[in-house]
Length: 343
Image (cartoon, rainbow, N blue to C red):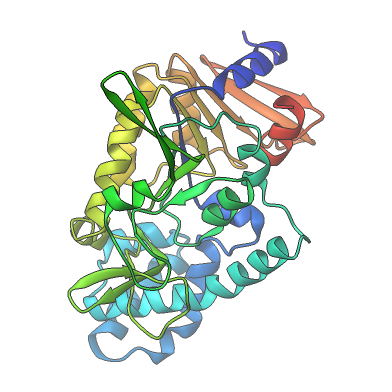
């Protein structure tokens, strides 16, 4: 049986060298970005604009949504056509980006602090960079990193017409060179390597290339929508490079922090689950606990999962085949976790 003191010790020892972060849509939702159920409703309400075969295909998808299936499950069973995929991506931007703008405005005006910023301000800043892997399209992670004093390595070289060049992007955080005998060592500012294997609101198609632009442009954004198509599109640049780097960081991680992630994405999940089951020290922080995550936490030798209890304010902890609920601080919220246990 585990107890609260063991939890505190585990958390405080977790934020050291070798940490890699995996952040899902749950963290964005906690900040006010609409989630998958909101997107499903938004798409359903707009489906009257569809014509021809796309309208027929959406009827099948809509029937699954009406029956209570999630959007991901519906799109896995009924793969969108290319035109329907573009339609889904556009409506996703229409729904999510206004909320992203409001949150970013509040942050930059000093009216709001992001939970991730609170956490990052208290973690070790490794000279090799802190990898953050996410399927999210929004840019709250990037903003949180910069507010915490990190340089964001997006693998692109600019902000307005940035080309994707991983090697050059890495050099953007270099602040000097140290010569140690015959060895030349690059010194970096605190750096977060933000990898987005599903794309981002600021990735655009530019001819046959991909470009990163921080402005809201009239152009085709590079985003992989939920469903089977993501496995096909995931092999195109720059998705393939981000997926490759993400999997490499997962394989090399000495410990893992997973926030707001439901383990519904095979792009990251296969490598991630294997590392957790093999005994990589892992802290999972999710508001809701699905059966998949609960089983993973119970069965893995060095995994702790924190979530919201059903009955009262506090934290539910699952690890080593056991679970206990504790009233008090909501440590499943990373902002609270950072303030209470990482001061």
